[in-house]
Image (spheres, protein in one colour):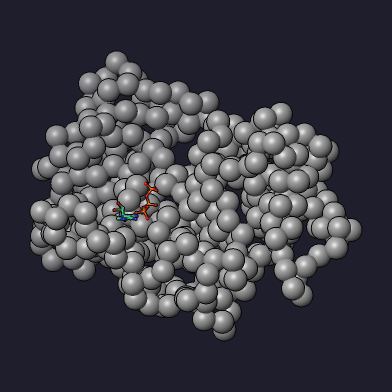
Length: 366
Ligand code: ATP
């Protein structure tokens, strides 16, 4: 089931009368989510991710715009008539009911032509439980489950009604680091097996990048960029997106283009074509540095962090906007920690420049 968002806008009245105006939580969101894809909605706190999800689910009504599931205009439908499965950060399971009863609960409320017999319900519960691999825990109460298992019950409960669309709002936030990794892979597997169009909200870029077919990066209610995770990482449209994606984060410097050369401080770090003389922000991915005794960019060496296969060189530079610069190199190109300075050549495809005022990307040739 494809989901179409047309000029979707949500404004909330500003309770702070002095500040005036409405809070625009979602601003003119236009997007068609292809059938069967997993879309990661990504952005910092307050950027409008949850509001977008709530608009799709029907928990919020848009101020402007419309939402279609396939060809059906669902904009005015209440949540219970949209055919959505919802999973939130808190599992919200009924503590006094067994896992089986918790999963069955949404089916008990079905009426009319949708009403199911006891046997049909049992079959559906067993199928959903099997899908999320908790079929051996059906007789337990939620308090007898781990956090990860409880979240699986919540997912099974969302799936049992065979929703047209699955909506997940920060479903992994309450899990510890290892379980987060495991459960996000589980979510991906379940989504692939069921082929349900899924929207997944997270502020964690690693999480979104690793399981999404498409990511949507948002800021202040506005969509910044939509694309496959690798495409967005490789081709950020603006400085915000470049900074938001990647661990360790991208390294940003004040820079200048002068006569077809890119300068950081007084060093020409790259020959570039097709850009007029101007001030820019230069952003370099951690994997874009090549240590070299004759390198173009000189940084003050801080320390080395050995991470097995790779080494992270931590340094500083007067033109850097980050407190420290992190460059990831393989352990063979290790530099001596006794040196005061470290010099780098740069990989041109890992260097981005952005307009100093608009922070929009400037495409250059080498
Ligand atoms: P988080 O990751 O912190 O949950 P988010 O990206 O999901 O953030 P939203 O919850 O969608 O962000 O909120 C977007 C903006 O709308 C925020 O500025 C928030 O304060 C505001 N907002 C959300 N709900 C309401 C409401 N009911 N009334 C007024 N403002 C609201």
